[in-house]
Image (cartoon, rainbow, N blue to C red; front, side, top):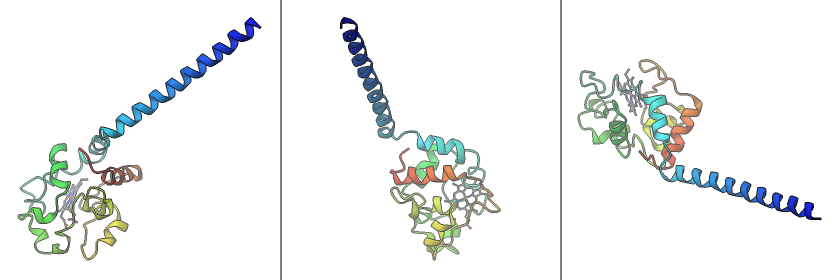
Length: 164
Ligand code: HEC
């Protein structure tokens, strides 16, 4: 009898500690999401850091001059989120051949399907933006590689508000 009671008490305690461990995990995940979770950090490191600043921000490149500067994490974010080509009066290509794209956001927080940054990697999204003709960055001259997972992360990051 005494023995059985000890076993019962031991079982109750291990049950409690499992519950405590589970709720601790839950709390950590919630914290992560609330503080914008590092999603942009990962995208910057995995996709953008090495592949955009060679053209965007380089004033001697006549096709990108006057447009957003994508050479650092901070300018990438501040020059694209809630910004449109029409915010860059000196990016000449949008005043001539690409007028139809001028009013579409590069990154429209909460609408990845209305974002030029997604359209350059995803033809289904770019087709929906017609008559704007987005330059696919998966083909020459850009030849950017983005994995399916990173494209999904990019869309979720934007749809969650595109936090820094
Ligand atoms: C080889 C040079 C080059 C590289 C590398 C490059 N871009 Fe571009 N990008 C351009 C040019 C040129 C344009 C304007 C071309 C056009 O629209 O015909 C452009 C346009 C864009 C646009 C506007 C959409 C459009 O159709 O014009 C976005 C958004 C963009 N680039 C983002 C990026 C991002 C993000 C990266 C890195 C992943 C990147 N670019 C890498 C040259 C480059």
